[in-house]
Image (tube, rainbow, N blue to C red; front, side, top):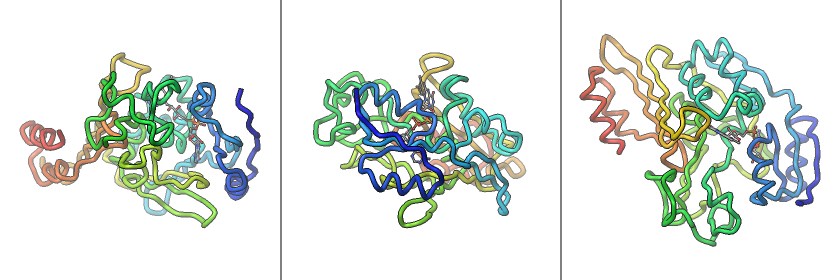
Length: 297
Ligand SMILES: Cc1cc2nc3c(=O)[nH]c(=O)nc-3n(C[C@H](O)[C@H](O)[C@H](O)COP(=O)(O)OP(=O)(O)OC[C@H]3O[C@@H](n4cnc5c(N)ncnc54)[C@H](O)[C@@H]3O)c2cc1C
């Protein structure tokens, strides 16, 4: 049994204040990841700050023609939201490829980005894990590592980031809005998740007391030509071995803009600028796309 305090935040500033006052505090939204980790003694927060009743559950149009999605919008609501589904079908299909219908009803937008790795060694407190306990070692590097990183890994960690939604957000150049003791700031999605490097315990560039308040999508949605492909061991309810959020903008048969982020193969959604650049200006033909795929791998 882990002892922890429970506090319900009355607003964003209150949530930040409650977090700053208790080192080791954690925000809780849907609880589908954090409660699992607490049961396994992987996460032992001193205080749980319940943010689930904050008024951050709206999807709003931005003046720039995009969407601002409150951090507490459930994944199921977002995937089925009329504007999101029409303008960002890539995002809707990536979300629908994740987890199960029950989980998607509980999981929220901000916390989906913050789910921890699903590496079995991270969950098994009997085994060394640099992500759980920095400096203890990585049992996965020489162990059973079929689900692990093939891109951007370090000698300290080969765990992958498992979020489907984040891969689509990488393709869409989303912005993550956060609030903390120093005020509000915006983090481009490409800079939100990080590679393990020499601090594998850190998944993101979010500071401990900062809270995600919203995710913003720019106007460009690649709605006409996009596809989210997820390869996994079962047809549903499984984490991706590899996923791709492919998105193209075509102009008279030529590729005007391209995105090819991969999921499940790195500690963050993996974008390769050289591969995307190799597509720009080219005819939308199989040989061109095969060359870009070769560049990624
Ligand atoms: C059986 C199972 C299968 C799954 N399959 C998939 C899958 O195929 N694809 C996929 O993408 N995901 C999958 N998931 C992961 C699921 O998407 C995560 O559990 C979920 O995203 C976590 O959301 P939550 O709201 O429950 O977060 P919580 O458990 O409440 O929180 C998760 C983390 O985010 C932090 N947090 C929450 N909200 C905020 C905030 N606003 N600001 C700062 N920190 C915050 C918490 O402190 C915690 O560290 C699966 C999960 C399970 C249990």
